[in-house]
Image (tube, rainbow, N blue to C red; front, side):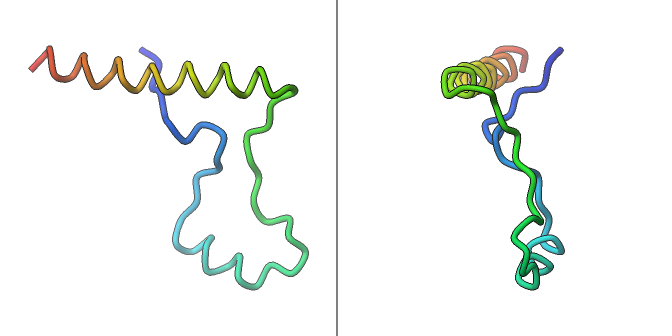
Length: 63
């Protein structure tokens, strides 16, 4: 079963990465999930949003 997330387009960061980014003068520290077009990004975001809703409903129904 696919695991959906609502933060699909954002990179997973930790506290350490946040502290280290304060010293990142080049500005190339973070890497985001890019899409070729705006439509592709919207489609992936919608799929993930509805997937999270479905996962929540499944969790409620199954107990």
